[in-house]
Amino acid sequence: MNRAAVTPWVDALLGTDRAQRVRLKQSLMAAGVYLGLSAIVGLGVWWGVVAWQPALWLVGGVVGLSALFYAVIRSGFNQRHTSDPALTRLQCVGCVVASCAAYAITGPLRGAMLMALVMGQVFGVFALTSLQARRQAAISMVAIGVTMAACTYAWPLAYPWQEEVLHFLLVALMLHTVGRLSGLLSGIRNKLSHQRAQLEAALAQNRLLATQDELTGLSNRRHMGTLMMAERGRQSRSRAPMSMVLMDIDHFKRVNDQHGHQAGDQVLQIFADVISNALRGGDAIARWGGEEFLMMLPNTGADEALMCVERMRMLLAERRFDHIAPQLTVTFSAGIGVCQLEDKLDTIIERADRAMYRAKTTGRNRTVVA
Image 1 (cartoon, rainbow, N blue to C red):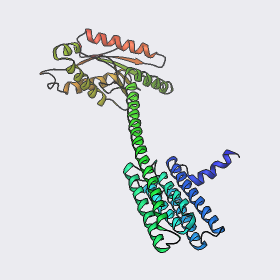
Image 2 (image 1 turned 60 degrees about the vertical axis):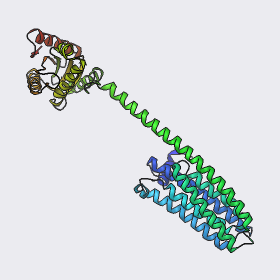
Image 3 (image 1 turned 180 degrees about the vertical axis):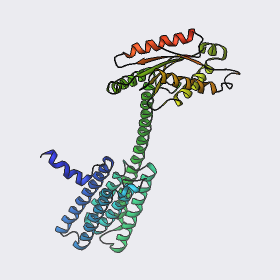
Image 4 (image 1 turned 30 degrees about the vertical axis):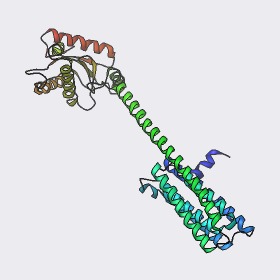
């Protein structure tokens, strides 16, 4: 059959939301079990071992219950039940009620109906927590025990107490075993969920480190290269100039030597914070290496770039560094290279580097335009 022709029908039955489709499939699987149970009961009616009136009530009840759960999930109403959107606990309770009713009306077939009760517990294995599984097993045992006692009291010849005791011990053993397995699987699920969360966190950290400098939180050299290539593509369409600014913190080695590397790290972090907060929309800055930083200013000529850098210089001068070392001041030297459409990025960065070197050799704490 053509898959394209089938897909609309599947979407109409299960919807398109992935999580809801899984829940609906589980619900329909349970409905299949109920239909199988109904067929067995119907066969018992055909052979004359099950009364048709209670059997009709049972079949109508389980079919209606299946339709109700399907409708609730298909409509999305189940998602209001955030702690159990699959309605697993409610469906397990429904299975207990249906199994107990089937046990009460099937007479000679009642032993087989116990399998439906255990199957309801199995359906919860992959969704219930260990505590919930134990509670469900307890509810099932109490419900079937009360049903057996009531049947023995009402029809002692058809439900002799010795057989009921044996049936109860058998189903209690099976429910206890399934409950224990549910607890083990719950522990495995929790462990796998924790490991998956750790793996996702590690992957997110790796992705972050691939683009971000760990100390300053700015883009790293590799990511800046990606940003520059993307901006060059936009520049080819706008044909506007782009300025590259290379900045170097003055006397940074002295800070490390006199106050320690921890003080140097703090200086780098504060410098990065000041400069990044002064950027305009579309501007970018990266830690280029050591105490050097590269800034990209799109759609910016030399004069405007010089104004931007000098504004940053004033903002840095306003920041206090006394908590790192008394009377510590931090300045920087900068070189600006303007990139026209025909220029290569490496060439512009080299020009900015030479301009920054001139700023260093002519007194520091200044900006030179290449």
